[in-house]
Amino acid sequence: MKRNIKMMIPITILILLMIISVTHVEWNDKNGVGTVNRAEAVELSEASKYLEALSIIIPNSEVHALDFTVESLLGDSESLNDYRGKVIFLNFWATWCGPCRTEVDEIDTLHETLKDEDFMIMALSIQEKKNKVSKFMESNNIDFPVYLDSDGSVAAMYGVTGIPTTYIIAPDGKIVGRAVGPREWGGKESVELMKSLMK
Figure 1 (cartoon, rainbow, N blue to C red):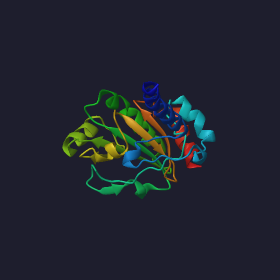
Figure 2 (cartoon, rainbow, N blue to C red):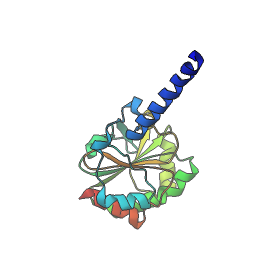
Figure 3 (cartoon, one colour):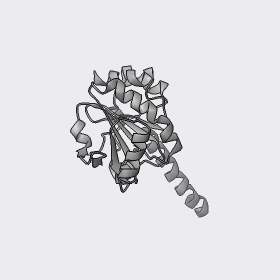
Figure 4 (tube, rainbow, N blue to C red):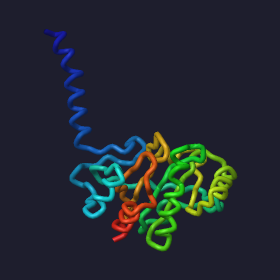
């Protein structure tokens, strides 16, 4: 009898943990990307269809993007919060990553389409040297803004475990979606998604 009770305790704890995980969203909570109640979820009425079309993961609760400061390829120091009020396309990538290389033309098309709107691309190259990234950008004729996450600390802060990973951030600083893997960022659904978030 005592043995059965001892076996039931871990099972009960496991079931409780599973119930808790279903009612909360976790975005790398130990690094501060937040866990909040479902009742505070971001409403994405118009954007939802575009998020779904692009297979972008929608948080089921409100998640605020953490601020950080990085160096651009031009040598300027910039923070995420510098662009509050704009839709931010936060992309983690590297020049050696095949899928990342696949989507750079798509990201560049998105940049060209929306560069005069309330929209900002922050593409963070993870743990790479400035000259290597600059050469890649020049040889591929890419113009979107690129920044250096030299030690990988920003990627770690955002819980990035594979690249490319992209976060779409609304003008109020809330994360509205996360995409792991390449997407057709230059396509109609992507452009309409960004525009819907600007309203």
